[in-house]
Amino acid sequence: MPSFSIFMEILESHRFKGNTLLGLGVELQEKLGTNWKDRTAENIAKIMLDWARHAKLAPGVFAQIRKGPIKGWKKKDDRQMAMF
Image (cartoon, one colour):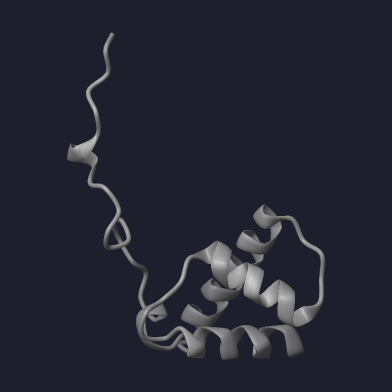
């Protein structure tokens, strides 16, 4: 499947730093020359990343499911208290 092959190249290029699902999907969209909405691109990236993980082909940081926020995001404890 050519689109999966291209997706694997994208994962390989981000294997150390990682990327969001939306970022991966948008990059795949550009390489395939399609016109997807952001949500569609994100869902396709999610499905293909799942395929790569189950086939044990996902490189670097994508090999395992990340639990918790991306480094640098606010923690749940840092949220502002509601007024009411």
